[in-house]
Amino acid sequence: MKSLLRSVRARQVNPAPPRWEVAFGRAAVLEVDLGCGRGSYALERARRRPGLNIVALEARRKWVEKIRQRCRQENIANLRAIRCDVAQDLPLLFAPGSVGGFTIHHPDPWWKKRHRKRRLVRPELVRQLVELLEIGGWIYLQTDVPGLAVEARQCFTAQQQLRPLDARRHREEILGGIMSHRESKCRQLGIPLERLAYRKVGGGVKP
Image 1 (cartoon, helix red, strand yellow):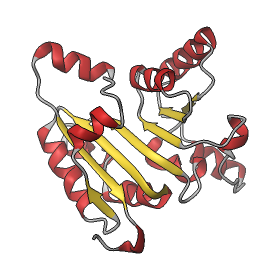
Image 2 (cartoon, one colour):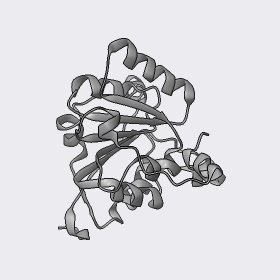
Image 3 (cartoon, one colour):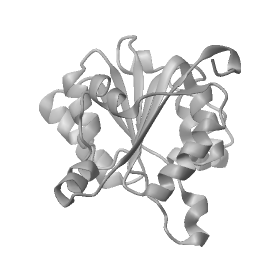
């Protein structure tokens, strides 16, 4: 798995996060799709909401390259696909308080007990997400693995700056009901989904 952090440490440098307003050529609300896979959600989100700046993060090179190719073919200017290790590299990519929203669609459950430490949604990652979110920013997660949803809810509720939202309403009203590739498959197979959504509030204490 490609890690930007590992490369930075090997070169003994400490770069600042990119200035995304420069990368996109404008200042706009920044949304980040964590583990974007084939990019179905991120591409459609970018098409529907050209006023957003969207960054899609994925470890697999072939999918990052395909997303970039689609952007070139369709002239989608408000989406950037980055190959990285989401579990390690977020502080290198985003400044504290700079992200308007994070989406996490069907993170890998890593079923074997010895592999669970590789799960994306862990307390340390959720703390990072909260730090990187602007006040009023949100996190949305969906999964077809009930046990993973339980663990994720525990991680989110432990953060005092996060307030739970109606996840279904958030999906429809804020995210436009856009489906990821995995969600489409689950719908075809009749597999139920769990959805979670939270908003960052100020002051460090839940209202």
